Amino acid sequence: MEHIRNFCIIAHIDHGKSTLADRLLEFTHTVNVTETQMLDDMDLEKERGITIKSHAIQMDYEYQGQKYVLNLIDTPGHVDFSYEVSRSIAACEGALLVVDATQGVQAQTISNLYMAIEHDLEIIPVINKCDMQSAMPDEVEDEIVDLLGCSRSDIIRASARTGMGVEEILNAIVERIPHPVGDPDAPLQALIFDSVFNPFRGIIAYYKIVNGSVRSGDAVKFFNTGREYDADEIGVLKMDMMPRDVMSTGDVGYIISGIKTSTEVKVGDTITHVSRPCDTAIAGFEESKPMVFAGVYPIDVNEFEDLRASLEKLQLNDASLSFMPESSMALGFGFRCGFLGLLHMEIVQERLDREFDMSVITTVPNVQYMVYDKQGGCQEVHNPSGMPDLTLIDHIEEPYIDASIITTTEYIGPIMTLCLDKRGELVKQQFIAGNRVELYFRLPLGEIVIDFYDKLKSISKGYASFDYHPAGFRPSKLIKLDILLNGEPVDALSTLTHVDNAYDLGRRMCEKLKELIPRQQFDIAIQAAIGSKIIARETIKQVRKDVTAKCYGGDVSRKRKLLEKQKKGKKRMKQIGNVEVPQKAFLAVLKLD
Image (cartoon, rainbow, N blue to C red):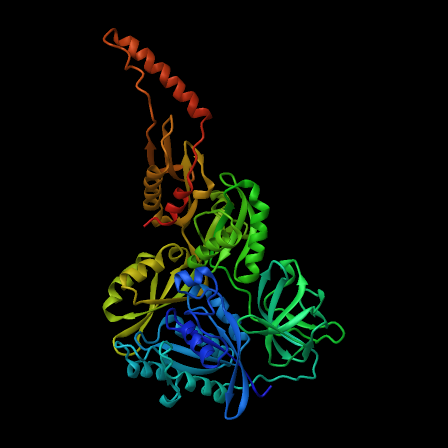
């Protein structure tokens, strides 16, 4: 156990975590690095150049004549995948905090660092990209010293691209990070921190052993679900899974026990022996709290059960996804899914398409509201169609977040304008180092759900970094905005919005739908309504045949007769005709500027 080190790499987006992981694997001869970001094995990760999933791998390293086993977990940097980071941190004793020498400390660096400090991890600060011409290692060192309170000699300067400083990092991991502590003779306690679905082997759970040991073939049980299994195969994670006969305290590895149903494996559960169980479960990490809700519906109604199976398999691989069945008049049966943010929602949609071949429609994303009625009762509403009648509502509370934005001083003005337009309030601002400033805002989550992050990036030319935490609920003047087509409400296009934004949003939605809904044989009225009050309207003109073309001269009453006949036909058509809303209209409403 003295020769095991468990550590993860944490950093902001694009600060070089995965490239540094490549160099560590190369230096320890664990794998022959043939391409960049070896651990990012999903096509989506390679295309977008981001890490979506944490990846665990074991390396062997010789230091001063002793052999050490290093278990590395490479984590994502984007705020939408911070749940992956919190789970990885729970399975480690130390962390490499990587900071980009050209950009310095950013919002996600600070947030991931606090998460690691809460779990009492030993932090090794690393300044990456020191080989670049625009690097400012001295200024970045000042920022890290301010942030961590460490001495300058603790900070390692490195470059993941050239391999500079990699040996120093490995030595620091062995010297500074404590080895796992636990009792090898106690009853087995192992924390599940991740799981994947394999179509041939069933569900594979990844765990870290805190106490005790496990042998291949042992009868084990999962503490929270109480289910019992045989450990058909256990082993460690290299680039592929390597079976072992026995795994003991401090080891990180996998277990295959032929589990077929996804609900039986919960991330954060404890594995123990059937014959000699432990008394208590390991205090895992808290459940993830979804921030954004959206309806996901199959395009073909008959694929509802396939979609359920796909979401269950995806949930194994992505524990922060939550879903429950719901139905919609416009779209049929589907699921109400909870995501950690918009990028997360986009990635889930892409993965459903690629990995499970599911074509889905996603409705307008919104957040969870608390609706209080006049009797003092309270209900959670995730969907505008679940709103009670206006006359029964006493008041509505919406979720707020504490946002931290780090930027250079030249962009403070536009960023403040953006946040204030989104009904935000400035809590405080403080200068970090040089010309960089951290702004703290309290913002309604519903306002930042759709396009806030994109706008922030374009205003600040990509420099501003953004991170947020939930800050409870507050009363707010919210109303339900309905979109009617020929007097019929389309529930998939309904949204909950603030009173001040309703007129503007209603008008823009009507204009956008007028562009996207194809013309029919009859007039289509698109209306935005609050309750029974219409606040905006657009009309899509009918496609009509020129019925009077054959009348050369003659009495005007002949023409009028033909036009009246056409009018009656159109009226009859309107009664039985229905309007198809194309998929791109749903998507365009999401991207309303």
